[in-house]
Image 1 (cartoon, rainbow, N blue to C red):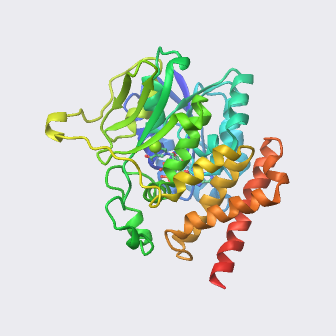
Image 2 (image 1 turned 90 degrees about the horizontal axis):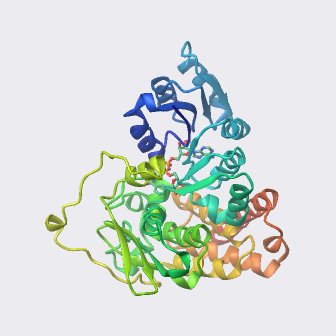
Length: 390
Ligand code: NAD
Ligand code: MG
């Protein structure tokens, strides 16, 4: 039996992972499940899968979790350090599906035990790519991409020589506002931004899809994971979300990866890699679909894409600044303190302030420096938002 743990088990990726694992209960020994405030879901899954340990991120919810798992034999714990401890428990395969920078520390902890880390949490590579890859190398651990685009690139690269790669093209659906006139974007509401045309995902990544901050993170993730130059990475708007990514080779050939927009594709590929196993996903009917459309993204509409280019050019800890500033700006948008287009303005201002200040952004990439940068970036977003309101 394979020992598996799922971080962010109660979220969209976590639940899709559990769906696959629960179909084959004799194949998996579930070590740890972690979640947040949805105690009922966490407890139900821990019972059903017979997990050794269930952890909530919220210390004040430990009692509720204990109550919900009374008599089940599942060990319970709470808080950030309990999540890190869970990540250190030996497992053959670990799903990293916490949302945000909070996924970084448990991911590193899991790599340190030499596991295979299925990485949905793209923030891990954006905040600390070099550190994370180095940790994996040192501890003989593997990282498998779960983001659909990166899984697609990974699959298109199977058996290929990286030297033969000319470019990598990741697609973007264009999110909730793809067809909106530019002038109306400023007034877009949280509810409107939370409604994705093709994918059913957590609220934060759904809003990030509408602003293309998600794609911006993914461009940086592509650079970090595959180690290719920023100018070899392209973004293409593709409203149908059927082609997830393409790899162009030096002979002009382009390998495209297609599939229904269902994250169980990428999760299942990482779960069964290097084999391919049957997956309960819809099969493509291209004749029924009729057409696949592609266009270049309008950079005036999606300033986040330009910011990603700035971050890659700047290097150092600017990825950690970018991610933290984006996360905090998103908090303010969700709390209705700023408008949709203000998110990119605020992130841009914070990146510039770091650049002008120097120091921290060029500090060595240690976990400690990443956290310092992350905290300061969030504080500076708050400053910028308060200044705006005043
Ligand atoms: P989600 O919001 O649905 O779930 C997030 C999970 O993380 C929940 O279990 C939640 O309890 C937990 N969590 C939240 N904050 C936490 C914290 N501070 N500490 C510990 N746990 C915390 O998110 P999601 O859509 O499943 O996305 C998860 C990750 O996967 C993100 O990094 C996202 O970018 C990435 N991803 C998601 C999709 C998708 O289809 N949903 C696709 C590609 C990549
Ligand atoms: Mg993606």
